[in-house]
Length: 394
Image 1: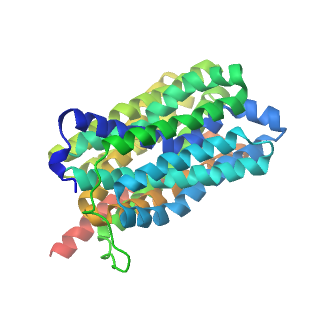
Image 2 (image 1 turned 120 degrees about the vertical axis):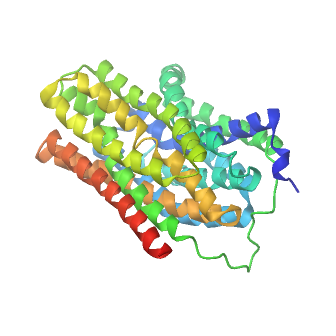
């Protein structure tokens, strides 16, 4: 049986790389759809609304599946769970590469959602099993940044591969990557039975903090999902060309990559995750206000707003997942992660269609106002949480 002392030195680096890759592979089905949207829409002869349904189905189904995969992760342990994440991701890419009709895309998104729902529970479980408190912050921040890194790398490489091999060929080639990563993970990751729940055993109730974190995740997910519309806002409201609008999205991604590592480390150094989460909520409010002001006061505020989104709603889950591990412990990390991810993905999935409808009927100012209101609600939730803790303490 592996112990926490097994993860050190070079193996710690490889272990972290596996977690980093798992977060990227588990979430890339939906991201790759955005990158290859033009190829897929033109080839399958579908409209943008149908294509949007495929993306929405992936995110919302991942939310529904998260509590289930979290329980399974606790049952089978972190190593088996992360191998499953890689292999199911490979299946989703493979089916995408074989898609000849819209319904096949929906089948692929089911496997993509399954993989996505298992990304956080499996990686969090491994950290909780194999690393002690005080050594989790940087590893958690780095592994959460795997999503942004994969988005960046895939955005650079995948379109060129699709031009050379076709979008189906790009997916078939992509399907081999998680298989190789699974083989690497099988070699690097130790197996520990310390956090597994035996069949017939009952798991203890989750700490109350997990419910608060799930609510916070929903609000930050909803408020932050406005970032999906930032390139469109930059083009249609601010008059930027598509390349500049794309840079705005890239600024959010790069900032979030760095912020996830930084926030997780700060949280661990402070031995307090509530203060960073409160600061992140306040910065999320500021990001929406700055974006709203950019329409009136100048496009230069777009870049400040993009940075603020990157350090707030796009980065909160590094602290959130670290809090889950510390609150739930190794035995319940999977289930707790699934609960919090459910809240986050529900907000992330519900936000874009609501924001899109608001833009179509009222305009972008109302969109940013709604994002401001929801982000402000997350600040209120943190205040209520602290008051609740004080009343319980009294």
